[in-house]
Image 1 (cartoon, helix red, strand yellow):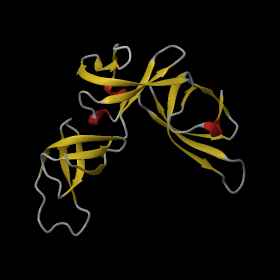
Image 2: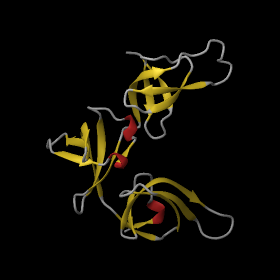
Image 3: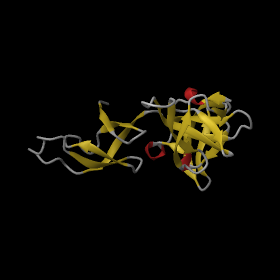
Image 4: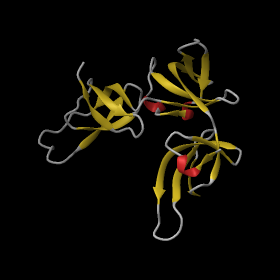
Length: 188
């Protein structure tokens, strides 16, 4: 059991018989009354997001997790196939359980979160930043750079992101896998 004030991003808890992972939290002290913990929790099984407020000192059932690096191999009917880099065991994980999965390409190493009590795989997380090549992008219009103008660009994984006008097709860029934002160009 853990106290509600110990919840951080990535903490897994069991609530109502389901496993939830914290994706956002805020420690809040209102003018009157007790301090509360506002949390945004994501259901590991179906991806549903729930906002829940806990009083400080409220006891929650903690889920002990283990994080291990797995390499993404390919996708088939069972889901995305990952290989444990230590035991070379291959496991399927549904694409909706991979955080940032639309930016994942073959060979990428992700962090797989496993429940230590029964060994079930809860979710997989892409690194916060990844580099991808732009496969399609409209050319930028000259003279349209007075504001922070952006244009859509299709990446090698099929995902679409907004990039500045000066970024062209064929260039390699860095993308934030948590929100899909453009971070910068990468020189090869």
